[in-house]
Length: 345
Image (cartoon, rainbow, N blue to C red):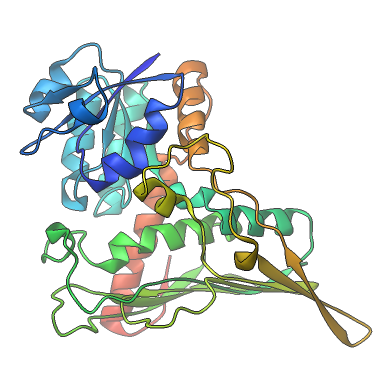
């Protein structure tokens, strides 16, 4: 079994990591570093609350460390874990700079360790369904892709670190990695990017809105996120030469996890019929539509793939190189927004 410890047992640890580690027979959840509230032992009897990160890393029984702390700590915590001989899963955003990402990738490879970035939104119901349609060639050659992750919040997040002016803070580095990762899965690295990054709320000190346009030889991908969307539009609008797919962002897994439901249970990740997307096609000048049942969302796939990587030397679910590519685009986006121009990748 892969003995695994978390760097944090806050919302991320409780919702996105511990449930999937504890329900996968390849893992043993050892515990978490808890700075103040000691709660993992009550939530998962038999686990341990570590008083310091140094104590966690000194535990020779631990094979895998999940770095799920604030963005500006990722580089240092991942590096320390690798130097201690641990495999690592790092939350998005992987690092604050692509240079840091490259250094960590090189370090992991030099020590023969597995390093992965936690991009769980690859396994959302809507994105899995979209990939299936593309694989089946139901959309044809892609022409225009619009992906959004919209929220409405006039107040500051209760997660204080997300609202402070620190490296990696702001919505570009918070939700941006999800959207950019999905774009890269669909189309690979773009030729260039144009970005509009703004502060829209009077109470905000960090960016809380962005639109990125990724340029490809034959199509464009537009990514939008922010906190000003009182009425949320479809999360996916994908247009191809054979058809287009329109779907709301409606994966249920986060809500299920927040409600205390455990993964790998009956009907896990299944969306309501009302949330299914619509495929539009044209024949003989007539446009028709049909409802496309959503594949179930399944974040468990990430840790299943990570186990195979550690135990059988298979590829990690999201590599450090892929994480670096995301950061390169975010860096180019900041450059673009500041200079108000298209920036090559």
